[in-house]
Amino acid sequence: MTSDLTVIKAGTGVLTKSADGTLDRAALVHLVSAIAGLFDAGQRCLFVSSGAVGSGVSAFGLVEYPKDTATRQACAAVGQARLMQTYSSLFANFEITVAQVLLTTADLGTPERAGYVSTTLGRLLSEPRILPIINENDSVAVEELKFGDNDMLSVRVAKLAGARRIILLTSVDGLLDPTTHELITEVKDIDQVFRHVREDKGRFSMGGMASKLAAVKFAVDAGIETHIAHGRHPDRLAGIVAGKGISTKFHAVGAI
Image 1: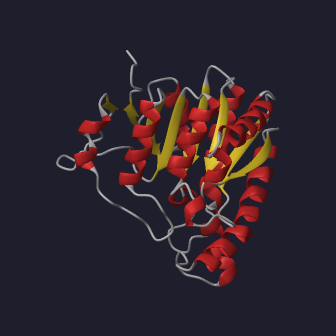
Image 2: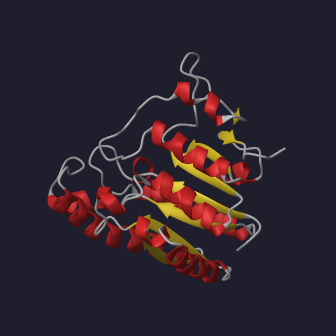
Image 3: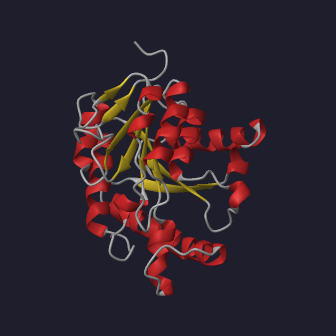
């Protein structure tokens, strides 16, 4: 689709307040501004955004992520509307139009259906000021139709779209060494880092580091450079794209 496409994925913990799971508007403002900066620099982007369920919980008077499927899907239905309304308003300040794309695994499950998604994304990306925002269709997806989390969704979409890189935004600077707690800035062989995994799931978050590394392996095996970076510091995005930002960089298989 484009030779230098970046897929940016923001998790629920990046987009919502830890206290009550509602949308953190200040965090969204900073993230939107950073993505708009990439647009202005000529960078094409796809944005995979979590947060639908988390942004909908307050409408149901909940204080944590719902356990039952019906409530979770109902929260997603309310929250997705809230999420896109917020993104549309914020990106409009930068003259960027957002496009909503909701997917389940069935949409990528056959070459024919995946081709439809690819064609749609390609057409959206051909427009210089349109940002496709992708999320799992949580309001209808049941277990057998789910990607598992948006980390895996983002890397599968990145492969479909022929992306050059993926940036997974989370609540830490990247992969931390469990002994020294220092940032591991570069990983050339992902199989060697699974021993560093620690589960660290918040109340409003689905994926821990284990799921992220599984998604990263899928991406790098597909030839896509992948980063794990801090979502509360979106100003680092430009540096990461330029090859010098703060993150853990996972080299694509076969890369020099």
